[in-house]
Length: 197
Image (cartoon, rainbow, N blue to C red; front, side, top):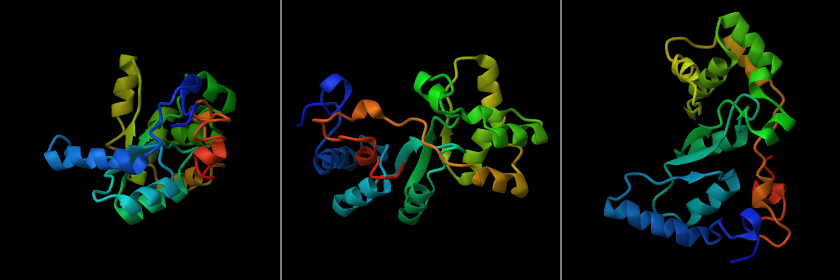
């Protein structure tokens, strides 16, 4: 394994995806895992995996929200029967690196939609993901926000507002620079995400 494949030059990323997946398939075969999946796989990485997988991944968990809608990946996953699960569906507003790039919950289209519906920007972002067919995994330690995050199932975003959300200029917020290193497996952000950035 190459030096620099993860945090501080330590190798924490599996570099032999086929062998790693074969081990996961054994867990699936043994009944120890009912389903197996991946996280942060681009369309290309999924395509490469599907070429060698006996058991296809059930899910790909990725950053996904109105400001990073993952259109190409979503279409690929749909065509292959892979569920897309959205981590950071609110855009990780408390993360320092994300604050410097953008804020989903302060995006004018998200805010405007929330105001028109009498909802919060967080509820709009979560409901957008649900209406797209994703599972959404919001994170909060505040009881009020947790309750607010659950209150997204008995209403929907109307078509006209949903279209406006689809027109938001796209920007990946969680870029993953920490996974890149000049001597590592992934030397650049573009290489890490296979140009899907």
